[in-house]
Length: 288
Image (tube, rainbow, N blue to C red):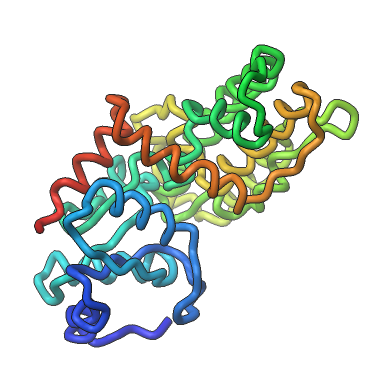
């Protein structure tokens, strides 16, 4: 990833005619590459801060963004915003506090944008039928709740590993954990695979470097499950629900995002859920 000089970062907004440049995750180190993060944060800013012109740029992974955040905190750069996935940062006391540093509410934007509150919206807009009776899809919703509940201990295991500078779910391709039954098309969780990866990961940490399990027990799987895995589970659940409603439809990430992002912006504007209050608060605090 090419890193601009401090003056280059600060002055980038001048060349784009913007008030700020917002750096987000994505791009894989390729200049001018696209990223879903660009659309997520860009849509929120356009809806909540119409008074600001912000150029949103994908800038690699979280380490690269944290380097920019540190420069913001030290005063080395200006005219700059950075958006970070919350991960477990707050619980690990690694959060960087500034009105110019924007964090997601849940583990990542996926946990927020694909919140359970918007499942019906995803179903309606995928089916393109206004009067569909969603009661038939309730078994899929209940299976999702069961899967999320069953994943809580593993999210806590992920948190424990993260406290030792390791991880669980970021190491596993989502398709190895979330699947679909070949017989019923129901979403499934491969607990055996999770257990196997957890054991092998824990073995990599020397006994003398292992920490006690954290005193905090995470309860909300929907908020703190690894973002890519959470989105994969939501997609499998939607396919299950659509089957129950009489449609055999495969959903792409692009379609889910196209449907969800505008709906999430409306939810942020209208709901008093702490998730929505969080986004209203961090966006309102950006200086004009």
